Length: 417
Image 1 (cartoon, rainbow, N blue to C red):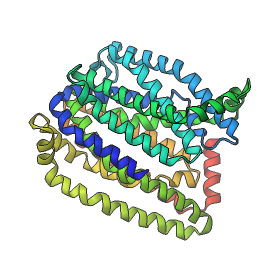
Image 2 (image 1 turned 90 degrees about the horizontal axis):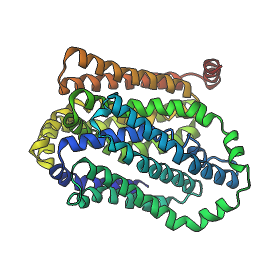
Image 3 (image 1 turned 180 degrees about the vertical axis):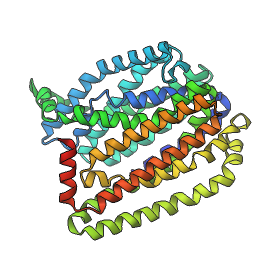
Image 4 (image 1 turned 90 degrees about the vertical axis):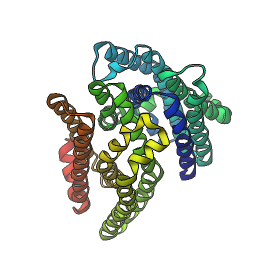
């Protein structure tokens, strides 16, 4: 899984210099705005029932959830596309930088993305990790190559968006071709009413899981369209490129460390409170060292390196990357440690943090508009404000870790009810 993720990121990085010279910063800004909406709306299109496929009680129930998500994806994606058209028309949240045709592209992008994620969860249940890894590599290679290949046919932001849709279709098509027989067998065995019963068994997925996931995703993705609305598509393109650079170490190291930390913390929490705390601090130190060294190097070398790789038109991204280092480092360290929330049943506290983080983003953008800050000034303040929210979150994790489990459960129960 780690290897497939690395190969996929390398493929995307390899084509970045070409994309930087073929497409304008404004094109990448519109693509980033498009993907920000895609990521946020994608939380809704499966009603969060897709993540329950892995933990379903029986194979039949898993197949029913799969079929149910496939049924609701189309109508919900159509509704989400309509909402995007309204946001563009009303000039809200920065989405006015997109042309109205973006709403037409959004529908297939949402459908393909949701179905691919749903099938991925189904494969995870069967522990078909080699298959998932193979599809991940193929999809990312297709996403990386498609914008370059499509440029002679369709330049501008449409070429980038079309490349994204083509790449995601490639991944979905591979999943269906290689698992078509098993899929047909599982779905054909469903009886009338199975989907409804499966949905009713997990009412907490749309009722509680979806609001939390929406707030969490919006806090991460909304800064880009908000910056697009405040400073224009070109500035959003600079910001989008830096975000991609930030996501590379997060995808390669941080998320995989999170999975290992999660498994070990769950085991040690059952055996010894002190062992769990020791694991927490060792993991924190490891992430600080691994993330801190490239962060320090980035302060000195990032501006020249990015300009050399991407071309002179991307020169402003170097200073933006330096400004975002506090945010990136805090996210790199705290995100894996946040699995404490799952092990110690503190999802309510996670929802509170998500709300604070989203409010901080809105406050910074409002202040930037009122005070007339430049893009660089805004990103500096945004970066430090998000780093501060991660520091608060780290304190919450420590408080959860250093309290006895029964007391924590009582607090959570009181907070819920």
